[in-house]
Each structure stands twice: as structure tokens, then as C-alpha cells.
Image (cartoon, rainbow, N blue to C red):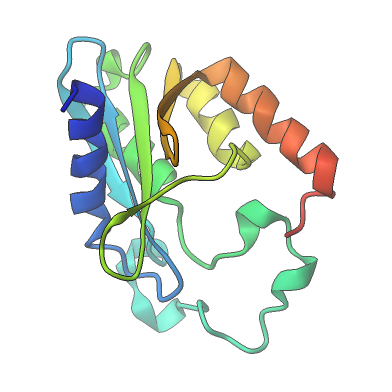
Length: 161
């Protein structure tokens, strides 16, 4: 097993704490020196399940852009915030590893990059790479490439499922 797979497994362990009722996602941020500096899972703001809208019948998901189909704070956002709190100096040049778990708690293969909010936030703080676990293996995307691919995804399907 290579070091990238280890970080994906760690992101999977973090995802087990997710409070979203629709998806269990986790992310870790690893500095260029190989030290994990941040982690996060998807959950309602401040982990307050009383504001959770995951299964709300009044939340029309067909009209929302794909990145905004959840009521939860993204795992990537929380990991970035955590890294900035823990060791802001090491965020520039770091790699963000993201996973989503399947129903059995196993790592689900990721689709194409699509979240322009996550890609812009990562670029803004200086993260250099995004790691996704695809069916054909691990893929590390340069953060600029991830951002461009996220925008291409939205241009191809209008940004909605």
C-alpha cells in the first residue's frame, strides 16, 4: 500500500464521524512534509443536527447546483479550516485527500471533480493538490487542474445533477 492510499484510509476513518444523513464524507490535509495538519467530515454547521435538512421534503434538490445539494458543511471546507487553525504555515503546498463512504463503510470511488466551491477555497489558501479515489485507482490533481475540471463539469451539465 502506498502513502496516498494510507491518507485515503485516514479520510475514511474521519468520514465515519459525518453527521449527514445522505452521505458520509471525509477529508484530510497533508503538508508537503508528510504530516497531517487538518481533517474534516460533512455535517450541519457546528454539528448541530437540529438544523439538518438532509432528508427535508421541502428542499428541492433538482434546482440546486450539484455542490449545493446538501445542507451540510463539506468535509473539504472543515479540513481546510482545521488545517488553518492547526498549522496555517503548512497549508500552502499541501494535498487534500477526499473520500465518500458507501453504505457498508467502504471507500466509494469518486466521480469527476465537480465542486467549484471546494476548488476555489483550496486555491485561495494555497493547497496544491486534490486526491480522489477513482475506480481505476488514486488520482492526484494539481489544484488548478482540479478547479478547471470542476468548471468543465458544470459547463457540460449545467451544474445540476
